[in-house]
Length: 99
Image (cartoon, rainbow, N blue to C red; front, side):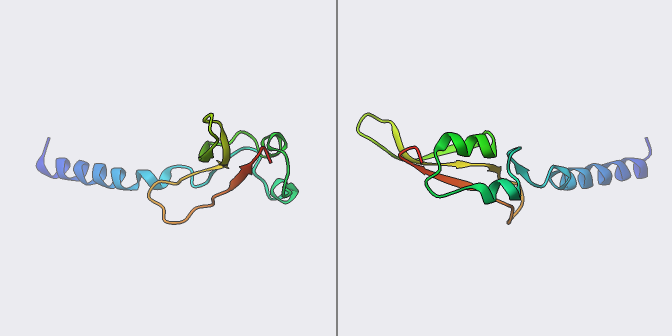
């Protein structure tokens, strides 16, 4: 291969690697997360109803456990972090005593 062709291929490869994160899906929300469903959320709503409404959360973060090690205060994350992004939509629902 000629030197110019190698340089062009190298430049294309570098640009592709740098732009790859921006080609991924921007917002990764659970399937049930819509404006209508968020408006249906109520303070004190049972945990099962929240999951039924918004879908399966991407992760659970435990904030406090009881003496037996069972979580009593935690929150569900219904959005995934977007790599290489400073801002993205985030939806967390805090659960305490199953509500």
